[in-house]
Image (cartoon, rainbow, N blue to C red; front, top):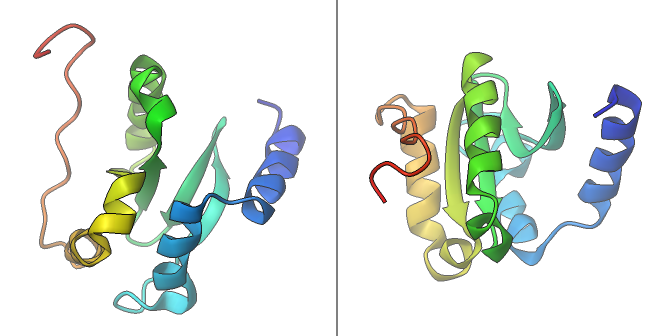
Length: 128
């Protein structure tokens, strides 16, 4: 994706966020979790990530139902982001609505370094 196109698209995504993104952003904005600054819909390489903190190099992705069909794309994307030194946390949209406290605790623990990075996904077809 061209950088100019990606920046334009990220602005559009910021102004048209999902309900799950809006709810999580309410808790992430203004450095509310341990003073960590998060940004939303930021361009990293050829990808737009939902939420990112450049220190501690943490990306948070919210997945709706469409992600069931694009697992291989998400795996390639996560691999690229990990090569850039980021830890990627993924949550399903329904987790935001049903267990926001648990989601925030996982994010907080990761920001504080209390959780090991999530394991890299298995290659397609293994472990399924």
